[in-house]
Amino acid sequence: LFSKLKQLTLSFVEVTTSQAEDIFAKISQESCLESLHLNNVNLSEVDAEVLTKITGSLKSLSLQNALLDRKQVKELLVNLVEGNQLNSLDLSGNDLSFASSNMLASVVIGVEKAGLRDTHLNIEQIQDYLNVLMKTSALKHLALSDNEDLKRVSLVNLNKKVRKAFVQVWIF
Image 1 (spheres, rainbow, N blue to C red):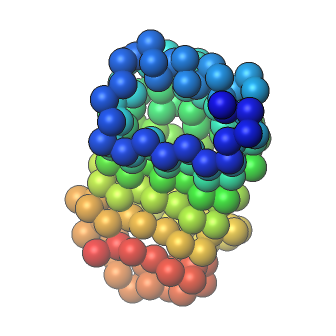
Image 2 (cartoon, rainbow, N blue to C red; image 1 turned 135 degrees about the vertical axis):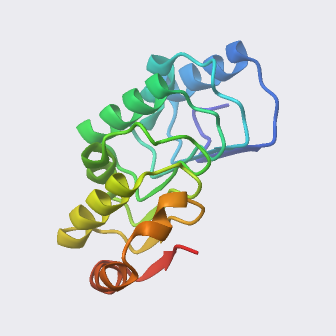
Image 3 (cartoon, rainbow, N blue to C red; image 1 turned 30 degrees about the vertical axis):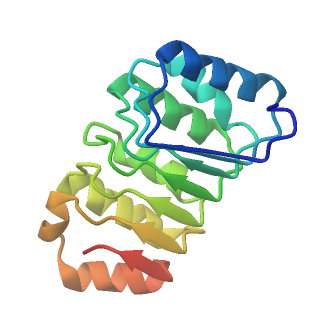
C-alpha cells in the first residue's frame, strides 16, 4: 500500500501507538510518500526515533496538534537540520517553547511554507527566528499567530523584516 502512495492525510483519527509506529515503519521502509499530514492525531507515545525516520523523501510534513513531546520535537528538528526535501512544514499546535531558535530557524529557512501557530514560542525565539529568516530564506508563507509573545515584538521591526523576507505572513 505505502509503496505507491504519494500523500497520506489523517485528521482527528485515533490510532494506537503501535498502529502509528507501524505506519511510520512502512513509510520509512518502502515509501515514495511526498506528503504526510497527521493533524489532530495524538503521537505523544510514538518513539521519537521512529517518528524522525519518516522525513527522508517528504516534501510536505504537517503534524498539527500532534501532542509531540520535547524529545520528539528535538529529534525531529535535529533530523530535519541534517537534511530534508521539505517545501512545507507545519508544527502548529505543538509546544516548541523549549526548542532552540537557531535549530528551528535552520529547519524553516529551507521551506517555502511554515506553520508555527500556537507553538508557545517565546520572545527570544521569535526575534532570533525572524533575524535569521531576514538574512536568508526560501520562505514565502509563514503562520505565527496565536503565539502570546508575538505581541511583544516591535511591529515596526517586524514589518521591516516581513517585507524583506516574506511574501505572506499570518501573525494575527
